[in-house]
Amino acid sequence: MSLVIRMARAGTKKRPFYHIVVADSRSPRDGRFIERIGYFNPLLPKDKTERLKFDLEKAKAWIAKGAQPSDRIMRFLDVAGVMKRTKRNNPQKAIPRKERKAQEEAAKAAAGGAAAAGAAAGGAAPAASAAPAAGAAPPS
Image (tube, rainbow, N blue to C red; front, side):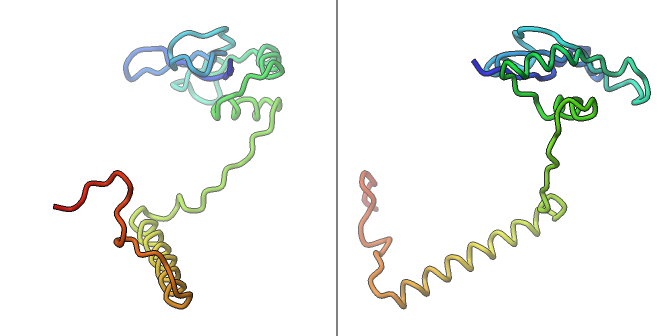
């Protein structure tokens, strides 16, 4: 049984409120949980103490038993000084999607061009259209 420490959404529409729970990873987000160890209210200002209530002792105990914290819970634990969260690095995120796709296509074309050039220089390369794949229907 894989345990996770995550947030389960509560509250009404457009008014989020989250319970911090320990649950089986296979259970639904708002479904069955093992223990509730705190809450998080994102609508309150960041300087309010009621914004986050988190029982760190219970969290440490569950982590010792093998529970994996979610990314947001890991942030809370990092601020509290319990665990260290590794910083993520995605330099591609800042590049617009159209430019990323163009770069990927250019890389594919360069890799495909290099493979074709290597096949011509190397000699015998299997032809893709010479033999149909097993189980494929013949063209009509």
